Length: 409
Image 1 (tube, rainbow, N blue to C red):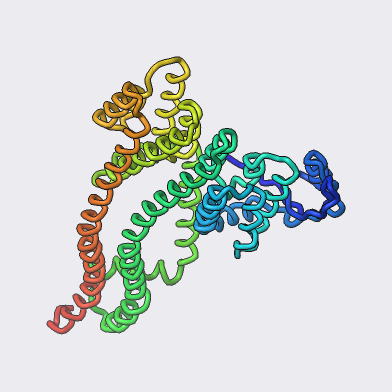
Image 2: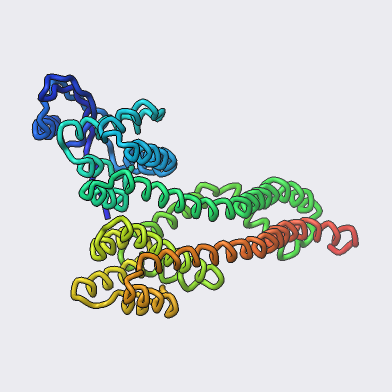
């Protein structure tokens, strides 16, 4: 799916009360920007384009924003405290503008505050910044704003985001050491193949001796890396490009997710993570007051697994037709019969939110145990694999030397 990111314009304007306000707005052109401002009841005196964001730049911005989730979490947490202290929304946003150090995010909050001041809803203002506030965030804010429980809602969102960040952090932390070892190992292999081995082979070739097959094979590999490295880089980049393009298609995404769920050892872990994310998100949305049908619509957008998305959409269709949600979840193959049964029990007893929360916590605990065991088993395997390749290179270099020493030409 391709999203078109419109340019942003900074503006200076006069509000209905004659007060000067500043901020930014997304629009197709300066005329559209002024039109938006007039719709809010303010008169623009100056409109300047901040940046005509290309797709590449917007993708970079999205990546940059994702690396600063702490800004959003801290903003949400502080806003919940302010709102629960009976401070008005506009005043709370003004306080956050003063406290926010990140200039880009400060501009976002400023624009949101200015729009709320002119009568626009908080939800509509957030809708213009989906690169910061995802569909879960906006959907829950909409309910909180409509029910007058915005402070409590933002507290729930903050807890939910903190919990998700902790889970993601566990996985990332667990993978740092293995990834570091793999990178160092590959670096050593490339260094030995392209710098050490060629110098030894040059001296051996002067003896006119017959080199072993393994030495010849590594010499050929070394020759390619040294003289045709740009072709290797191009081929690797081309493969990555083709794979990424194919994964963007519906069929490619389905094959990827199907494969991920069936991979030995890692498949069950991935499945647990997908189901845990589904249960946690749905529980949070239902707990915030969102309807089941709307909650399932939001969950379908953030689940991240095509097979699970299809199951959630089918569950939503069944809900709209008056049926249960457990059956399509069970038929998806992602959710085990036991968990599907727990969902069905929670649905019949009217305690679905609590049941989903219990499922999520249980799966997260089980996933933590599996990750710890996998890392404990994976590290020795990685070290053995690296030692094998280094030993192979050493054998290719030493075998001719041993033959020469023994007089076997």
